[in-house]
Image (cartoon, rainbow, N blue to C red; front, side, top):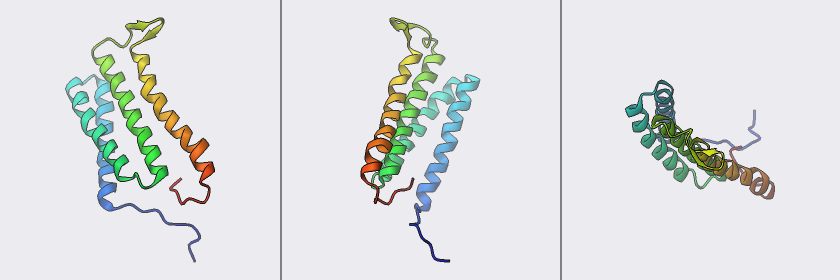
Amino acid sequence: MPQTEPNYSIPLSYRRMENLHIVFWLLKDISWCLVWKPLGFAMIFPTLIIAIVISIRTRHMVSELYHNLAIVFWISANSYWMIAEFFHFDEKIVFANIDFKELSIVPFGIGILILAYYYIIWKPRNKGAVETM
């Protein structure tokens, strides 16, 4: 049977890095949940660094780049929130009625804006482009 749509594949080394990234991410979030501060802090760096490396490696595929950049900001927001809870400043007021935990909305929002740009502006303008999504 002939294939009618393009095939998407990535090198095995990239896939292995993505899978390892998931392990680090889960360890970070489990550490957060169980309040294992040393492991939680330690897992921020490999999780974030691998997310950045994946973004750089996939920069030639617009869909992958935008989604991976959103993940970088998601991990950043998530890590900040974890640190705020670990150091018990998450509920302290920064200004007005906004607490320190709520400042994580900034990187979360940047991730959403990146994806909104991709889906609302880039993708409709590039309908013929071969993408992964």
